[in-house]
Image (spheres, rainbow, N blue to C red):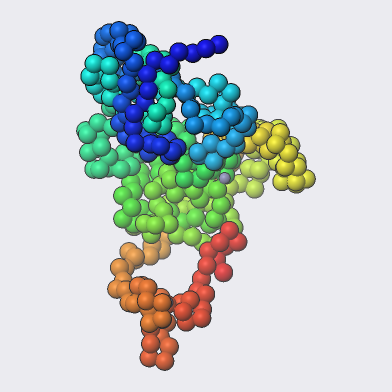
Length: 362
Ligand SMILES: [Zn+2]
Ligand SMILES: [Zn+2]
């Protein structure tokens, strides 16, 4: 097989960069004179597909790490090290100047030989990035989350929650379920200003689902952590009338029963330390399945719900900061240690303070 080269890519990228950075720049595709007739009416297409050669790739790898850190077979990635050496990318056609096409969204290096160009009829919409939409999100960054809560779209909520959690698991699903229910019950709205507070009783996967759905987070001081090791959380407004949702004692057995395959794989991977590629892949796949199955289990069989009265802490104060006399870094006033007339930060005073790790606060 012998593919003709019809043109060449011109841009500022001599070496591979993060594809997202490359795609943000414009490239020019210069089509050779003898093929320029083939561009007739191409400007009618908003999006075109560019097929090009990865001319700087050295050979191929059948299994490879992607830019996002996943380990996969080459045919399930967009890696340049592939047997054909051919890349394809959908780009936006910005303008045509004779035989020169200006495009955005291309992730090919400067000098890449172009082998083909085709129009695309199923363009992604620009609507997502329209100014109207961005303005809307500036007014209310949690609009999408809130509408998903009211519409009880827990699959969507978990898909988005996994962006901070990193994986899908039954724990994340439980956090999403508990938080969605509590938000619906107390008609919660969170703008991250501590008018809505979440009190979690454990630091594990569950609490990420709760942080995402309630908007009460570590960073906005609306998340309170009680190191009690219980799958339970309370959602309250500032009047202290809250809802506490806790896992039932027989919830685990019910969950195991609904997805026995995952339990078997869990035993192998975690219990028997079977870390073979096959078992790990199976474990992850089953974990995703179990997470989505869990979302739709009978709520009453998994959790107890109670109304509670909460003593709501005052709004987190804003503190002055001082400069540590030793390291010179600014420190919140309440964390300053006074020693021999000097002000130090905790580590410079020889202390460790309180630390939250996977083992809790210590
Ligand atoms: Zn998890
Ligand atoms: Zn210091």
